[in-house]
Image (tube, rainbow, N blue to C red; front, side, top):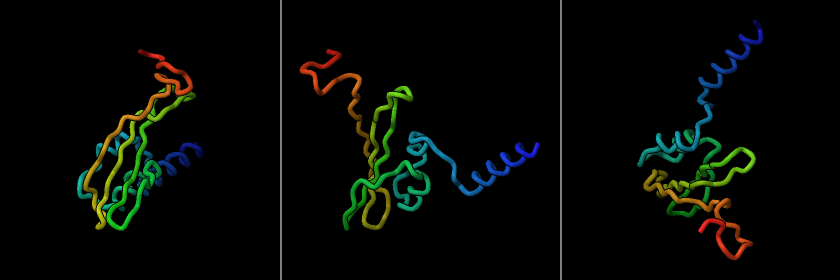
Length: 112
């Protein structure tokens, strides 16, 4: 019984503090043009990685993984562009290289 109360208390405190782990696709659904960098970083948590930083803009990257647990690969990458005022101005999506379809050490693709 004590374990159940402790687990419930930890779950409640984690949710109350806003420390809820979100998937990259759930983050992408909640992001909106014009939001601040701080809002974005709070929403994305540890998924967001600073990709570029200049005086005029900053770019954050979130990678979407696919494949079985033992053979994960980056399926796509989203780049979030912020202007010098710290507001989101553009979101780009790029498909990533899938290592299962092509081996760079081979001369021909595995799938024609």
